[in-house]
Image (cartoon, rainbow, N blue to C red; front, side, top):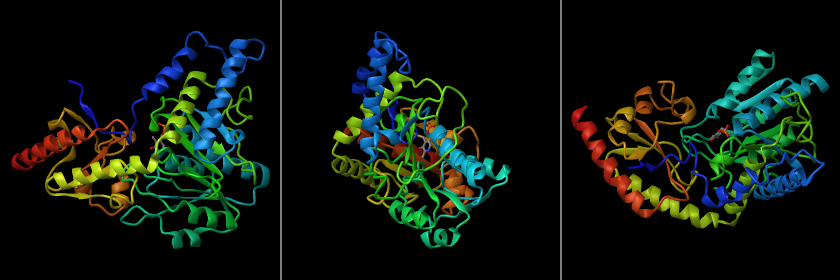
Amino acid sequence: MTPLYLDCNATTPVDPLVVDTMMPWFHDQFGNPHSVNHTFGTDAAAAVEEARRSIARLVGADAREIIFTSGATESNNLAIKGAARFERRMRGRRNRVVTVASEHKCVLESVKALAAEGFATDVLPVGTDGMVDTERLRRALGDDVILVSVMAANNEIGTLQPLAEIGAMTRACGALFHCDAAQAAGRIPLDVDAANIDLMSLSGHKVYGPKGIGVLYVRRRPRARIEPLFSGGGQERTLRSGTVPAPLAIGFGKAADLAAAHDQEKEAGRLNTFAHALVEGLPGISLNGPPIGKRLPGNLNLAIEGVDAGDLISRVPELAFSTGSACTSAVVEPSYVLRAIGLTPEQAASSVRLGIGRFTTSDDIDFAIDRLAQAINRCRREA
Ligand SMILES: *Cc1c(COP(=O)(O)O)cnc(C)c1O
């Protein structure tokens, strides 16, 4: 029996309509979208440009501001390292990068890599709900700051950061605002202009699209200047050399169209109802991160008193969920995000993440509550 999938913050299933849209671009229409001498190439190029427009529309951007990458990890690296290195090479007046402790590993590691290159870096703490303290951020800003990187929605605890406020203060100090919106895209409204976002990372596989494709939004007015990571043929406005994987880009475009066509508010309401049912149906648990309704729809992170998360997960093979972020689950350390919001190592070790989404049904939720409640009780009895 296939387990019930409850890990939508790690990845989402590819929507069948996305699969259908992608298929022809693997076999009949397999052209290189950068080949301009025949219709194999030009047809693929036209479809990639349509996908670019679809993704741009989802976040209020212009298609010319969308750069295809291999995913949000690459986009985050490109934005953060690219902005800092461009500033050093071309201007050199500013030397500091600011982020927060609950960011995705690829953001924190990019910032760490810049520290090793001699840039000054600030990693600001977050509150018990995972929110950045905007007063503290304001004090950290100055005319030496190149870039501020704050995510839209946290992948472990669903915290939604106040992007408009952060964007306004970042713009006022003359720094660039980078936002990792991999979790937020398609789930909550995003508008690059409303939040003064200069650089924004998205990932295909978090919005029911394929893995291995992402984009970086790069603002044109006022222009966000970044240096590429890769040397090569100069594709993607010289910012990302390499052949754009047309089937994946086209699939991501379709996924963006589907997300835009969805009634986001209604879907959020449906997921919030499910989340309430889970929280109320499980014995002796507490919610890590913001309350339902104020967090990313579909994300739950639960501290389960007296239970080891790994023990619980192994007792319910019929459910697929996780201890935290997929990216660090090889390491047996408690989640640094849960530690950053003040959980003890013990509390973090008894916390699990549940991610529900587009294909989760009310029967699924009943099944999950039943199996989880039994397993929690067994864990406690046998601990
Ligand atoms: C999944 C995720 C990433 C990494 O995206 P990939 O496309 O898998 O590289 C980065 N940031 C956040 C917030 C994520 O959820």
